[in-house]
Amino acid sequence: MHPRTLALVAVAAAALVATRGSDATAAAKGPMKTSRVASSEAAVTKADWGELRAYYEGESYGLRDVLTGTVTLKPGQEPHPPHQHAEEEFLYISEGSGQWHLNGKDFAAAKGDTIYTAPWDIHGIKNTGTTPLTFVVVKWNTKGVAIPKQPTTD
Image 1 (cartoon, one colour):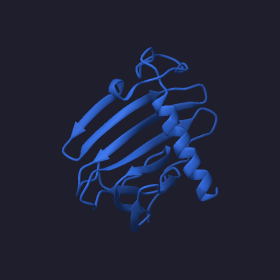
Image 2: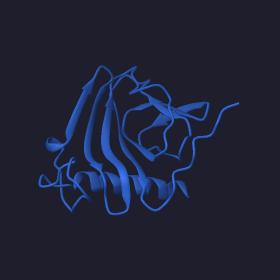
Image 3: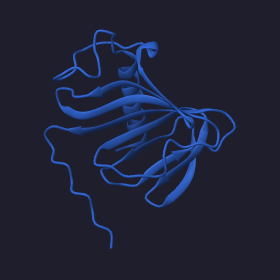
Image 4: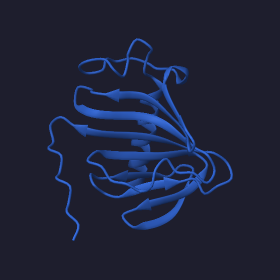
Protein backbone atom coordinates (compact mmCIF):
# COMPACT_ATOMS: atom_id res chain seq x y z
CA MET A 1 0.00 0.00 0.00
CA HIS A 2 1.28 3.48 -0.87
CA PRO A 3 2.59 5.49 2.15
CA ARG A 4 0.14 8.33 1.41
CA THR A 5 -2.75 5.83 1.50
CA LEU A 6 -1.51 4.50 4.87
CA ALA A 7 -1.44 8.03 6.26
CA LEU A 8 -4.97 8.68 5.00
CA VAL A 9 -6.20 5.47 6.63
CA ALA A 10 -4.66 6.55 9.93
CA VAL A 11 -6.19 10.03 9.64
CA ALA A 12 -9.58 8.50 8.85
CA ALA A 13 -9.22 6.25 11.89
CA ALA A 14 -8.41 9.30 14.01
CA ALA A 15 -11.56 10.97 12.68
CA LEU A 16 -13.53 7.85 13.59
CA VAL A 17 -12.07 7.97 17.08
CA ALA A 18 -13.20 11.59 17.40
CA THR A 19 -16.76 10.84 16.27
CA ARG A 20 -17.91 8.14 18.73
CA GLY A 21 -20.74 9.21 21.05
CA SER A 22 -21.41 8.91 24.75
CA ASP A 23 -24.34 6.58 24.11
CA ALA A 24 -21.88 3.80 23.19
CA THR A 25 -19.70 1.98 25.65
CA ALA A 26 -16.65 -0.19 25.17
CA ALA A 27 -18.28 -2.89 27.30
CA ALA A 28 -21.45 -3.10 25.16
CA LYS A 29 -22.36 -6.61 23.98
CA GLY A 30 -22.44 -7.24 20.25
CA PRO A 31 -21.24 -4.93 17.50
CA MET A 32 -20.78 -1.27 18.37
CA LYS A 33 -23.32 1.19 17.08
CA THR A 34 -22.68 4.34 15.08
CA SER A 35 -21.86 6.86 17.77
CA ARG A 36 -19.54 9.57 19.08
CA VAL A 37 -17.18 9.80 22.06
CA ALA A 38 -15.69 13.11 23.12
CA SER A 39 -12.09 13.08 24.29
CA SER A 40 -13.35 13.77 27.81
CA GLU A 41 -15.44 10.56 27.64
CA ALA A 42 -12.67 8.21 26.52
CA ALA A 43 -11.50 5.54 28.96
CA VAL A 44 -8.19 6.86 30.32
CA THR A 45 -5.37 4.67 31.61
CA LYS A 46 -2.51 6.58 33.26
CA ALA A 47 0.93 5.10 33.85
CA ASP A 48 4.50 6.24 34.53
CA TRP A 49 5.10 6.39 30.74
CA GLY A 50 2.07 8.62 30.01
CA GLU A 51 -1.56 7.84 29.15
CA LEU A 52 -3.83 5.86 26.85
CA ARG A 53 -7.24 7.24 25.84
CA ALA A 54 -9.33 4.33 24.49
CA TYR A 55 -12.26 5.54 22.40
CA TYR A 56 -13.48 2.26 20.96
CA GLU A 57 -12.66 -1.18 22.27
CA GLY A 58 -14.54 -4.37 21.53
CA GLU A 59 -16.42 -5.64 18.52
CA SER A 60 -17.74 -3.96 15.36
CA TYR A 61 -19.69 -5.59 12.53
CA GLY A 62 -16.57 -6.79 10.71
CA LEU A 63 -13.93 -6.60 13.45
CA ARG A 64 -13.31 -8.26 16.78
CA ASP A 65 -10.79 -7.17 19.37
CA VAL A 66 -10.68 -3.66 17.87
CA LEU A 67 -8.99 -0.84 19.78
CA THR A 68 -8.84 2.79 18.72
CA GLY A 69 -7.26 5.43 20.86
CA THR A 70 -4.47 7.87 21.45
CA VAL A 71 -1.31 7.38 23.48
CA THR A 72 0.74 10.24 24.89
CA LEU A 73 4.29 9.32 25.91
CA LYS A 74 6.38 11.41 28.27
CA PRO A 75 9.93 12.26 27.11
CA GLY A 76 12.23 9.25 27.41
CA GLN A 77 9.34 6.78 27.78
CA GLU A 78 7.77 3.91 25.86
CA PRO A 79 4.45 2.19 26.68
CA HIS A 80 6.22 -1.20 26.69
CA PRO A 81 9.30 -2.77 25.08
CA PRO A 82 9.03 -3.84 21.42
CA HIS A 83 6.47 -6.63 21.25
CA GLN A 84 4.32 -8.74 18.93
CA HIS A 85 0.66 -9.79 18.81
CA ALA A 86 -1.88 -11.42 16.52
CA GLU A 87 -3.68 -8.17 15.66
CA GLU A 88 -2.86 -5.90 12.73
CA GLU A 89 -2.09 -2.34 13.79
CA PHE A 90 -1.61 1.21 12.50
CA LEU A 91 0.24 3.84 14.54
CA TYR A 92 0.17 7.51 13.43
CA ILE A 93 2.23 10.20 15.20
CA SER A 94 0.22 13.40 15.64
CA GLU A 95 2.72 15.25 17.88
CA GLY A 96 6.35 14.89 18.90
CA SER A 97 9.24 12.73 17.80
CA GLY A 98 10.91 9.51 18.82
CA GLN A 99 12.17 6.18 17.59
CA TRP A 100 10.33 3.32 15.86
CA HIS A 101 11.36 -0.30 16.25
CA LEU A 102 10.28 -2.70 13.45
CA ASN A 103 11.50 -6.29 13.25
CA GLY A 104 14.92 -5.62 14.75
CA LYS A 105 15.56 -2.23 13.12
CA ASP A 106 15.35 1.19 14.79
CA PHE A 107 14.75 4.45 12.94
CA ALA A 108 13.55 8.00 13.54
CA ALA A 109 9.86 8.66 14.19
CA ALA A 110 8.41 12.12 13.46
CA LYS A 111 5.09 13.92 13.44
CA GLY A 112 3.02 12.66 10.50
CA ASP A 113 4.72 9.24 10.33
CA THR A 114 2.54 6.14 10.12
CA ILE A 115 3.48 2.51 10.49
CA TYR A 116 1.52 -0.64 9.78
CA THR A 117 2.38 -3.92 11.48
CA ALA A 118 1.20 -7.31 10.27
CA PRO A 119 0.35 -10.04 12.78
CA TRP A 120 3.34 -11.21 14.82
CA ASP A 121 5.76 -8.55 13.53
CA ILE A 122 7.87 -7.07 16.34
CA HIS A 123 7.28 -3.35 16.77
CA GLY A 124 7.52 -0.52 19.27
CA ILE A 125 7.87 3.22 19.74
CA LYS A 126 9.82 5.34 22.21
CA ASN A 127 9.73 9.07 22.85
CA THR A 128 13.34 10.20 22.43
CA GLY A 129 12.36 13.87 22.22
CA THR A 130 12.05 16.56 24.90
CA THR A 131 8.28 17.09 24.52
CA PRO A 132 5.34 14.65 24.72
CA LEU A 133 4.85 12.28 21.77
CA THR A 134 1.21 11.50 20.89
CA PHE A 135 0.13 8.79 18.49
CA VAL A 136 -3.14 7.33 17.26
CA VAL A 137 -3.47 3.57 17.54
CA VAL A 138 -5.87 1.37 15.57
CA LYS A 139 -5.50 -2.36 16.29
CA TRP A 140 -7.83 -5.19 15.24
CA ASN A 141 -8.59 -8.75 14.20
CA THR A 142 -11.27 -9.38 11.60
CA LYS A 143 -14.15 -11.79 11.96
CA GLY A 144 -13.71 -13.27 8.49
CA VAL A 145 -9.97 -13.87 8.28
CA ALA A 146 -8.20 -16.54 10.30
CA ILE A 147 -5.48 -15.26 12.60
CA PRO A 148 -2.07 -16.47 11.40
CA LYS A 149 -0.30 -18.80 13.77
CA GLN A 150 2.56 -17.25 15.69
CA PRO A 151 5.81 -18.15 13.95
CA THR A 152 8.30 -20.21 15.85
CA THR A 153 11.79 -18.87 16.43
CA ASP A 154 14.78 -21.06 15.78
